[in-house]
Length: 426
Image (cartoon, rainbow, N blue to C red; front, top):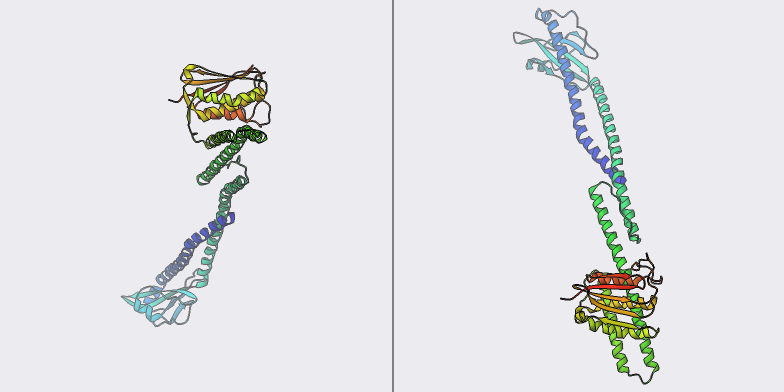
């Protein structure tokens, strides 16, 4: 690219110099010819004044005045015979000069010639010829042309220097943009294009930065969806598998009930995937309004056996004033699944679910009798699922609550109590 910029600039400079220099060179040549003819005419006029008295008395001039070399001055009769001076012995174009009656330019191949008549009462009585070699004019013209060529060379050199600097100024940010785009294609979405101070290039850099941010956000959402889906689906799928395996081992199991239970579980899994996709894509989740009391009672029945198997109990308390309040059932189920799973894994003793009115919002307190949370621990930070005490679940639950316009916070450290605030359906 740099070579193309330099080559284009030099070509433009050459064209400009040619368009300006060639006519100027022709004008210079014509100027020197015209100036030399004017000089010859002045020399001829001066000599004519000096010898006119002798010519009018019909006497030959005694001598020719000295002139600057290489100008040659001579006086001729109207018939073309030389009377005095330096020049050819006969004047071939004397008749033309006599008929013209004025100054005549009579250039030959090698000389510039001017003829000035000497008149007596309108009659040409003599001709003064002044001449100089064309080589003198040509030498002066060539010297001027060489000076012009030198100036043209300086102009071209200046154009080359400016073109190199401009090419470097334009090429460097474009090369950086190319490297940035290459790194972006290799998966480095933290890369950012520098600013060059050139609006057009900076606009491309801003677009590239925006693309990197969007791609980084998209991949982060995809990774979050994968992790969230893995976390939220692992326990239900394990339960479904255990349920099916138990049905196979017990020949007296009512398969219809098992199938219906499995269909219910897969339906909940489908809603889970739908909610997680909506969260990952920043689209509003599907709202399936349900009564708080009924939804939490179903959740209690689902989780009570799991806690009983660990020698623990699950207690649900719902204030009558909010038992019939309606909110998004799938979202409540997803968040409660995270909180109860967290209590089962990291808590101890009896797990309590308390539902109360929080002044226009629904408050759900989930607590246990375990050791609680150490002071200064951010339980909502997103870490590896295998990390002790924190991980994907609580971070996901908080995001689900915020997506519904609610909040999830740690109300008490020891023993731990999580409080979920959700707006009620109108």
